[in-house]
Amino acid sequence: MSVLRTVVRGCGGYLPERIMTNAEISELVETSDEWIASRTGIHERRIAGEGEYTSTMGLEAAKAALANAGMEASDIDLIVLATSTPDQTFPATATTIQAELGITKGAAFDIQAVCSGFVYALATADNFLRAGPYKRALVIGSEAFSRILDWEDRNTCVLFGDGAGAVVVEAELQPGTSTDRGILAACLRADGRYRDKLYVDGGPSTTGTTGYLRMDGPEVFRHAVIKIAEAIDEALEMAGLEPSDIDWFVPHQANKRILDGAARRLKLPPEKIVVTIDKHANTSAASIPLALNVAVQDGRIQPGDLVLMEAMGGGFTWGALLVRW
Image (cartoon, rainbow, N blue to C red; front, side, top):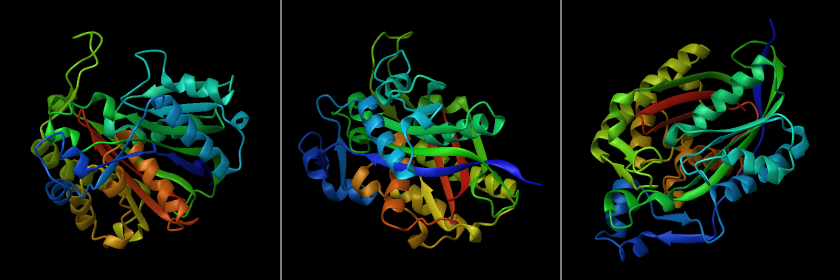
């Protein structure tokens, strides 16, 4: 029996022009290129410049995704933006992007699940499209994390960068088998007991300030591999697939050691992992769509490939998605 699936039509990305190397960071805090690279896999990151915001970066990624999909902005009737760094407390930054694209129909809203944001956003769009009220959606991850970093805290300022990625997705009838194109399974989870392990120490209703990112790195690392593995196992079971069926693993780019740990558990060879953390650092909700765009543009991801995405972020939130390209 045929089923309605959410199929990826195109993807795009945007990175600010300014590159900040580990050597530059070592001039701000007590660290070194060797220390950062050996513990995280990061060599450089992009930093948003004057006049570059979450909305402007997300807009450019959206335009690139629409061009890649061969669609016009007028074809879109839903925008879901994943971000923890909105332009303003309100309105939703998604509405700014909607206006800049000239779209006046449908819905546009933000989702905040920190580094898990893109997984949450894509799963949310999937549910809206399969439910019927919308036909095509832009799902965007865009972050300006450099604006919420304490540049005197070497435990956090070395880890993050800015950027945006986007995908265009469309509802399409598929045969209803594991070889269908589109999203085959999504597993989303959260456990608020760990909210103080990765957070920002400000907010409108508490301090009235933006605040800075704070993180208990060892605790985040300890939970990440376990929780990510559980979500991946559940998504594979939902789709009736095995780890050996995976063609490409596109994880949230948080830390090279976390990426390697998850891949080892899945028994995936290194050549099946899409890694961009060395050039992009951790771009939170933007990291997965940016990595997807790199792998699509360089020809690695091809139609029919099974792509696994996963992420864990503050909250804790985490999840996994299986998509047939």
